[in-house]
Amino acid sequence: MQELCDLKVLVNDQHTFFLHQRVICAFSGKMRKLVKQENQKKKKKKSISVGEFPGGPCGFELVSRFCYNNGSIDLTPSNVALLHCSAVALDMADTLLEQTSAFLDGAAGWQWSDALAALRCCEAFFPAANSCGLIRRLISSLTSRIPLDRTASIPPPPSSSSSAASTSPESSMATPSDSLQKKEWWFDELAVLAPITVEEMARSLEAFMADNKSLLLTRFLLHYLKSVAQRPGSRKEMEAAVGGLAETAVHGVVAIGRSTPGAFSCRGLFWVLRVVTGLGVSREVRDELEKLMGQVLDQATLDDLLVSGHGVAFDVNLVVRLVRTFAGSAAGAGEVELQRMRKVGRLMDKYLGEICPDQSLKVGKFLEVAEALPDSARDCFDGVYRAMDIYLQSHPGLSGEEVAKLCRCLNYEKLTLESCKDLAKNRRIPPGIAVQALVSQRSKLHMETAAAATTTTTTAETILCSPAVAPDDEEEKERLREEMHRMERKVKELEKVCKSLKGQMTKMAKKSLSHGNISRGGMPKLC
Image (cartoon, rainbow, N blue to C red):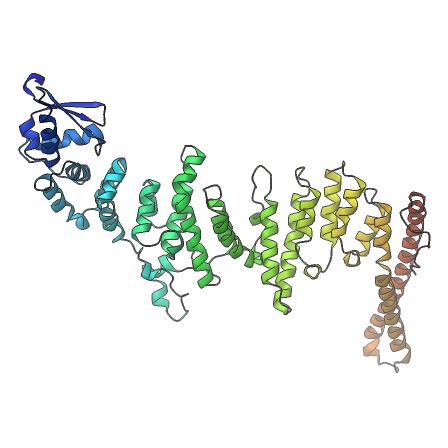
């Protein structure tokens, strides 16, 4: 058969086809041009190369069949994309290209599965399919069936009066308050596409990178990124492939979060961060997401904060950044801001208690977490002390200087008497620090003792000076007597604690003097 063929064609520089010159040139302008150039060399056997061909040898073989079948071939959604790109590559404008273009004009009426299959076929020869506009034509055929247009990107929150609107399919898909993890029927269908195809889809919708303001597209991208992360392959290759999509998703979350306060829960934002971490998101874009998260940190739970860092058990740096962002946004003097601040303070105490046994946690990082909030965020520092105590137990090799540095995160005046007594007895705490803590309790002891004494006196006067009571009031009289006895016991108990603490301070002062830790001016009087 080869002896009868007068044209040798090399495809992709490695696959050879032997064809009849007159058959192939009758339909291809490019082949006619190449043959003409080859004729000038006056060789008996003509050999030409078409370079990189769409679909490789399979695509060229399909076109050859079209030519040998006298310009006729059955077009289907599964082969039209390859034939169309081959026709463009071989300059078959008046023949095959005209037929494929007419067939593609009806793509809007194809079944969803046919349009999706044709788009997936294009991924094998994406540059050729994209340069001739085929990718966008097929994407348009798919997106026209789902509400991904930018005009309906950020709807207002639904009102209680518009119940009909809130129950419609469109509103249920587009309401910002919906979970970011809610999945539509087509999410899994499009998740099989290559990242470059999904990126082109975002570009065609004018919603790529910072232009993304579509909630539905954002939700799809997050679902897609989560799916892609589970595929086998190199991490670097994955970052290069989906980095733009990850940033597009974050831009969408930030844009909607800013324009619609309360659009996303704090837990939902943490989920977004986990999805895009390690997918090539730039520091600047990540900062915008963290700023949004920090502003609603009072909604977070301990589980939200327990995210792993790079090579360490906990991402403490992230938590510190979020707390500082929150402290800056909730710095007002109102009661609401104060309550939010104290809620985060309690959350940080729990977080410290969780991370303190971690052997990779340095003293400086512990302090950054403990001191990220102002003292006003905590009514009591017992939680910080408990976490610090566990940290000291878990890190026995700390120097005295490091322990003293660690203790600076405590506000001794906001420790309860029980915690202060425990600190004074704690062998891991330097004596000088313990003395400072005990001294800070002076005013608290004086105030509580005076208050107890005053209450006792007032109660006694009330009972002694009250007129005779009727038999029906005997129960009230008995209650007042019990209250007086209780307050007397409280006074005695506080006096006993005061004496005990004074004794402990004296002992520690003597011990500190021997080490030169306390000045020889004497101890302040406790009681």
